[in-house]
Amino acid sequence: MSNMKYIKVNPNYKMQKIPLPGTDLHIILIDEFLFNTDPITHFAHNIAYFNPVYFDNTQFPGMRDKMPMPYTRLLKSFFESVLLPEFRPLSSNQTHFHSSLLSLVSCLPSTLTVNQKMPHVDSCDNNDYAFVHYLSSQELGGTSFYRYKPKNLTEFHQEHKSVLPEMITEVANHPNEHSGYITSSTNLFEQILTVEAKVNRLVIYPANVLHSANLISQNSYCGDINLGRLSISSFASITNT
Image 1 (tube, helix red, strand yellow):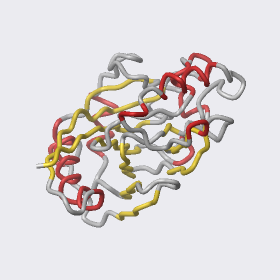
Image 2 (cartoon, one colour):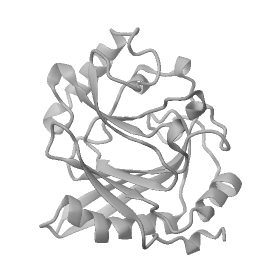
Image 3 (spheres, one colour):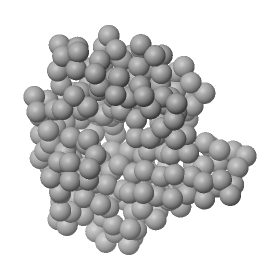
């Protein structure tokens, strides 16, 4: 069954809520999220047209293609009905999904820009959320969350925007410690939490927390769809109604 129209949430998914150390925030993990991942695997291997690196104007170190609308609609519905009450228990909100991108890491560590050798935030707005749906297993690496030690920052707001270029400068000034993908603590960044990858695991976190894919093996960035790190990255904003 490969038609994307038939994807549905697994009624027996498992949810965990994990506090993000040093903040009042938490990460939500959904294991066995989809009832059947075959339609996604079929799309990835047979239909997706992976655009080259930087095609989507982000710093993502690999190739991407947009997911079909049935996936985004399913994720939006799940977020609104199941997850928002966990993140925002007392409010009624509308959500806007910006994108769901099938993502395959393909940049070798030696080719990275400074921005790609450090953790990042997707936004400085605490109404924004990021989602990673892993389609590959633990050994290809999950997602790690970090604290920027010089400013003691994990969670970024509008007033912290000036710290972002400062971080890039600091990373450029410490090339020995930031020579490739960041996978552990450095003198600038403390790794405070790691979520392991697992096939069909969905992780949701506030988009304004410092994070990075934890690309721990050579296959993590090999760019081969059969061996490499395949995931779906999605981004949403909520608006109070």
